[in-house]
Length: 212
Image 1: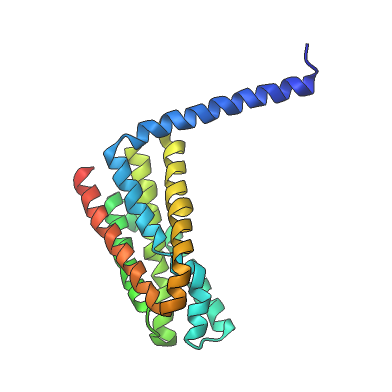
Image 2: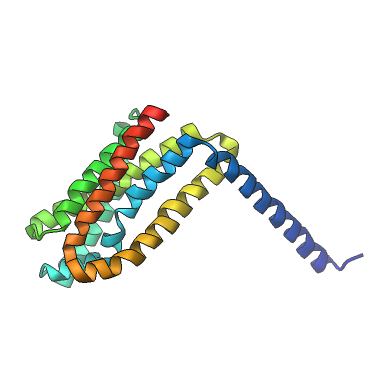
């Protein structure tokens, strides 16, 4: 017989192998569904629209002449707005359809990114950061609601994994890689491209609402 340690490792490898096979099997099931593919495209465009802000937000704020202290306030304000939505917005959003939440979120995102392309002043830029509750928060709530309603419980973990890989991994990674030279050439005007991505996501959301 194998020593206990070797036996445990063999058992772990077999369990991991079965888990990987299950992930690929469940992933194929979901990826064969046109509605799920449309959903993945929708939320990938929605989250990828944050790429310029996540990568160059501080650089943008400095180019507008804001101090590091105020830049800290700007970053914190977006986070606080998101937290407030998650903490207190449940009653308002509970009855809303998933696609409605996503659509409103990306529409607010488009407004946010158009505003970020220009120096709107200290108050204006602060208000734009509060829209993080929409561009990220509402989209996230809509995403989770769609996954909970549209994906069978047995496939829920795989569905959420595919969303995370596409939206936060592949989409965000490729966008961040591509926008470096673009931001170097056009500066804050690059946010206008992010507004276009939000607009694409909005169009896809309306298509998703009809198809689902």
